[in-house]
Image (cartoon, rainbow, N blue to C red; front, side, top):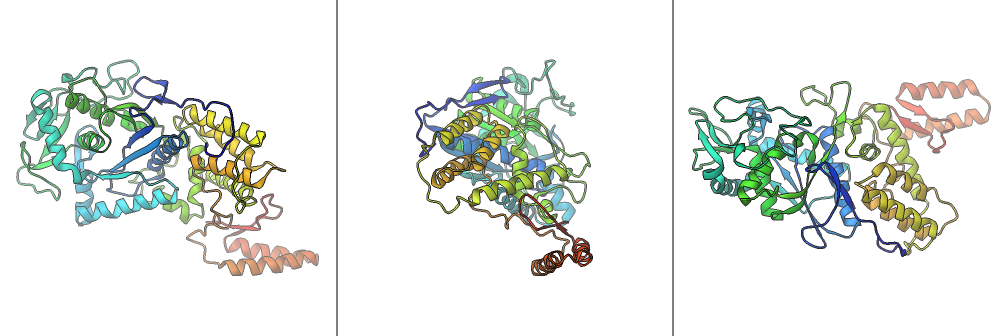
Length: 484
């Protein structure tokens, strides 16, 4: 924990392993290092805020590993080929479908949505990984990987090369397939030996031309979706590596298929990663999370409605990553208010010179913070401890700044950089200028001082009509906020 003076030993980091459905102490494959692979987006459309919860979780995990002293190597992939509209080996390639619908180059589609995803990563203060691995950069390696497992584990159909899931031990154990705990059923697809078998390579159908296709021993075509993650994680992190993350939906098909490929390639029961970790769903009741709903919920929509994106990050941190999180605009507004309080508390020590933390009250809080994050990333408790430190009075400013910086380095709320003015985001639909608001508020204060309440109320009504909420008596000390 840097310049924190404490004699207490740091607690071990315990993480929930989806493979065993239990908490396990994190012991790295390579001493002092942590190697993490996160399943990234398929760049055929904008990511919605439910997608982005997975990257807030993976970022929090990475920040915690750094906080615990590990040298972190984090890889996030970009899927620009191979992902079908149905994860269970059916439907069209998502990128090819998007390119055809919009009459655009598939490469332009992928580039546009990759950059949009990266913009959301920046807006949510997610740290840059060591590597962004792009699927199409690794197609030759994918072909070599497939060649290495084809004879013992695959069979060929007219449509491509398929992996026989009965050739590896305990297929589907991650998703609890074949048990009462099984969360997923995979429908049979005509021609496959077994319903759970999946494509390693897809041949381009006769008479068709794909925008993305390559020559292979099984015909011209493209790799299956699952192959890319096995190939890129091994290439960049080596087998075995420490942690593989993704949304809980990946636990049912994608990750079991990765594990099967990894077992086949290593000629063992090794899953590739020691820990498999999954964040739960973001639940939104209106149906606007779906990308087919038109104006679906994405980070830019939150900004357009006047919410700072870090309010959404804080909203994610308020729930444990393994719990479902329900989204509502009221909940996002409450998270923004909570963030404002933290930013205002941090402002008083922002310019102080950081000092070694020796005050017992702060060292105790930091020890509790470490314990919370070490217990499977308990961010709800960690947030309350951050707030307790921020609210402390009569304490050395330099030590308080250092303590807040240490906690915020894990939670990623940027408390010592952003200001409360930064959090006042202008809704897209609002046209009134801030100078006009301030001038009207000045006149209103003068009217109230003169006890001219009719004029004061009239000015308030004018501001409300322009989309400005006047916040009289607000304990945060804010005079107004813009309403979308």
